[in-house]
Length: 504
Image 1 (cartoon, rainbow, N blue to C red):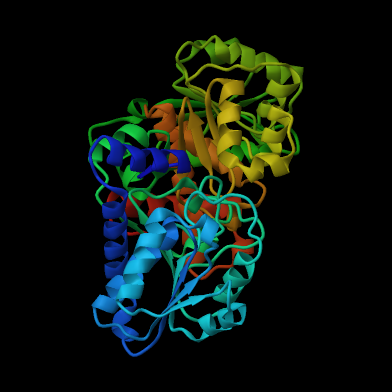
Image 2 (tube, rainbow, N blue to C red):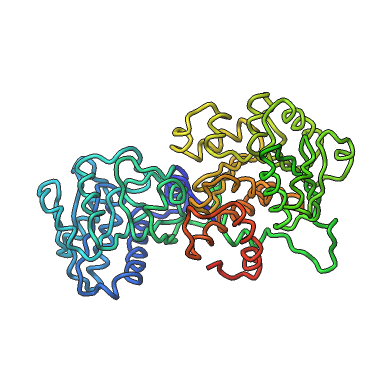
């Protein structure tokens, strides 16, 4: 699913007008009309005798809301009240035009700057339309807007946000101070990246993306950097196993993980690689993990310093979980660089080794899988700075490592080159030791079967997140899931995805 950043959305709007001859007024009319239709289909059959409050700020988002009010009024909806939070000096030309049209139709308008006490009336509405701020908002909500948003949020009525919930930063998903918690967001043209990360999902409610007339060429030609990795892509990329195939057809993965006291990391990674279809998995460490073989009898074992290991065929490699971050690990990473064309997943202790021993940049078909804490070491910035703008942090990590980056968290991001994919799955159940080891093995298992790095990383990360979603949807508490539960659920979730049915 293609997304548009705030800058790209503005550019699409400008080009639609300057190149394709569309006017701002026609686009606003289309946005308001389609939003009204969506509101009608979703809410109004049950609310035909109730009241609607349309809350408008001074910009074009307020103009969109005024168009919605006018269309509702034209459709015969009379219990309608417009609330304006629009200082005269900030009112856009289109806002003024749409307000005039509403007044000509006799729609009641209340100026909350002149009569601030009337703001409490919003609570009595049975439906609220939020048109205070659009996608260009950033920073912190201040008065008089803060009070209006607080009143809207305190109302029990469903709230429909136009283009974006007011107060949400569409670029980062952050909320500074306050933002409308919408029941439904109707956005125009393309969805925005901030809807899916940080605090965005808690504010947008149901998302509806409305095509208001932006030219296809403008959308495709400008929105080229941010994408949503969805279930549909997973179905496309999951490897297909022919009935006539044998184990050699499904790749040979080398997992370099574990050490005394931390063998479990190697068990989780190795067994998860088998679960996603790898044909062979060899588990190696600085000591052969013989004592743990009863947990994963399927794996081959080796010691890293065994030359026979390096002379064998290797399709892909995972390195890091439970391995240690000392000089020996750094030397193995340098040796892996000599395996031309072999993709490598660098996780956990191997990431620390790269930082401590100056191993960046890495080959471009490799993938590093840091969480925010690990990335803070790589970039030498605070975790809070990373979480403030996860997209910027992921791109900065790519510039540092020069390979694919999977920034884990809510939501996980995959950055490479000038592109970033948001993995649209996962919840806080994954915040537990060992779950990252499972993910590492899943990525490696898909790489071994021939998927390219972004395909394998996105597919594994999505599956990993949906396993946690399945756990919660099945009635389990988020805090109860373990990494081993992920492995146990993986076969049935993959099977249902292959069949093309919904997971839930």
